Length: 117
Image 1 (cartoon, rainbow, N blue to C red):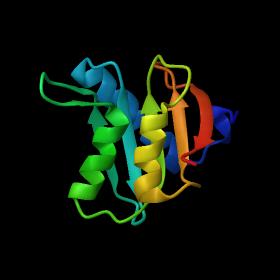
Image 2: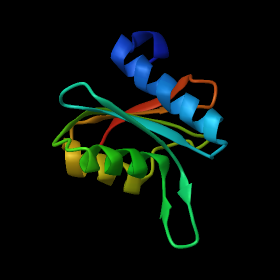
Image 3: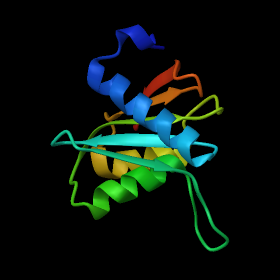
Image 4: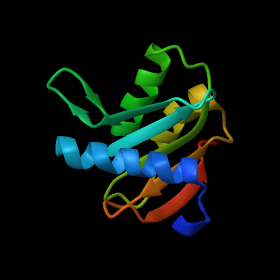
């Protein structure tokens, strides 16, 4: 596992954005992704009767809908102990197997850093 202090400023930024989305919207998870041009996309959990998406799936969908063709990194803030297989698959679809997926707790502390692989 990587310590939060080992992360670069751009990775810390997407964790902060994800944490803010979670708190602002009062949702179980917040997420942020950074595309190949450095643009960021931030989202929270979507829980409608007809549509259910994790925060990370929503952030990836927002990136795709905005024209992103690749991802550099993804972050999710959650109480979970691991990034779900579905979340990692969504990141992998756009960013490739080596794309970093950062999981932080609600306090912003990094719990895990894995790849989308």
